[in-house]
Image 1 (tube, rainbow, N blue to C red):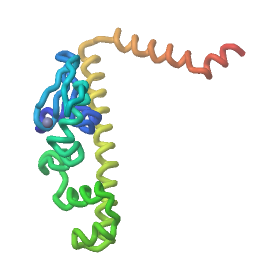
Image 2: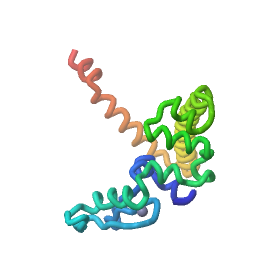
Image 3: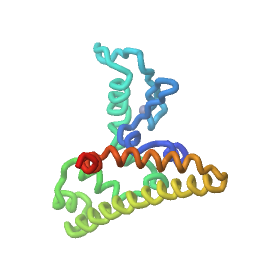
Length: 176
Ligand SMILES: [Zn+2]
């Protein structure tokens, strides 16, 4: 996984650890490029499994699961410090604040501060994602206007109108 192909991945793909390619009918591991082809049955421990199931087993077996693989990504990619990674791995082991504090040789209030900061980073990451998506929409709008394509805009307005008119509120209103 590198910075360039992360751009092409959805959060869902990252959480699963693999991506399905509709054109080639392949499941590709994000951590090592291993491929299992849909439509084939794979043998695993004397059992027959689908390509997707085989991929899930591969990720558990070869990469110790998605969580640890993502956590193992370098700072340049994840933006996480070693302390944050350590804390996250201890949280994954179901350790409470006191146990985490002991293991990391810090106070429980520092543990709480780290946890609070991670939650804050999560919220900020969500907002950043929304801003970047909104930016892409703005850029597309701008492109359309520049190209003088107004037909598409009209079509979109029509679509929104027809969806709205199907809303129960409008249907009831029409009946009265
Ligand atoms: Zn792999």
